[in-house]
Image (cartoon, rainbow, N blue to C red):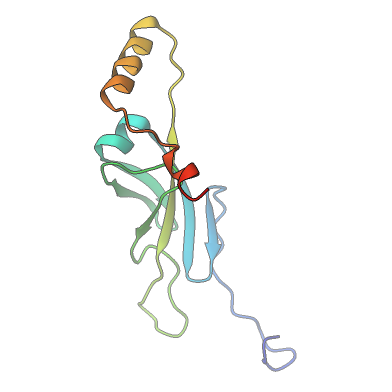
Length: 126
């Protein structure tokens, strides 16, 4: 396999059983849900890593789908012991379900204060 000697053992990577962490070479990827206010204002959130929980700094203005890097939180290198890969965290901004009139009114006010259209880039290249 990949130029190796037939019958030779294949190097094994540690396997993580959490459904939110996925291996990709020396990097691990994970998803992190955060509230709209956390993404807008910035915050620190706990995310799962192969070593357990760790804090990730969400910078102000983070968009849904944006990828953030956690340096040296991935798998240890087989060629360079002591050197680890990164963990990539994809941020998913959760839009709240507005169940009362006060929350709806606050969202309307926020919309009036921030008039930038998020869809302008869709039509710029047409």
